Length: 211
Image (spheres, rainbow, N blue to C red):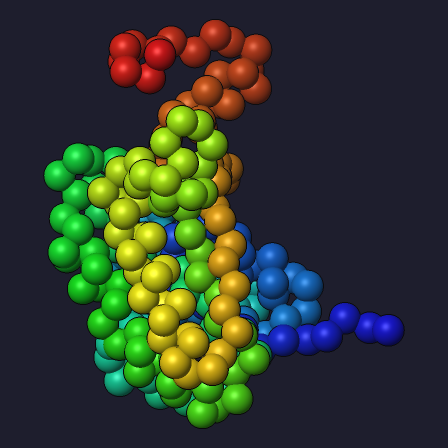
């Protein structure tokens, strides 16, 4: 029995994990449409490199598509086998001053309408990508607490989507993104460590809180 080819609509395609999700799905033979919140030329250089790789992989990209706007709603009405909610507000996601209200507005505006439109268009399943910063998704002594305000925003957005999916009568899955690192990612602590280890060098950690 051959692989079932799916039509997948993935939001947040220019992000590090979103780009690799989209390219992997396209490489497996699925038809992938990825959304971009801005025009391609408005992205910084690193994101433009990811966009170029997406185009080379055969991913169809739609610019200026956000959950609450007409571009996104028109896309959903085309009908996809899977609707993947990957785009989220991640600005200052490591900061204690992360703007929870702004993030929830960005994540939730148009989500109910998209869920209802997806059901009407014959979508088979919706998928949400979560994070270990959410309650109940990490390991340790504080399993029932959000680790950061960003984690709280992701958890509250997930709860809202679960409600809207149930209202629309659509199956909903969740994929947890743990601590990704790799090519075409912004420099983060894990990437820093791996680069040094790959050269058989010892990295220096000068931030006591990381210890």
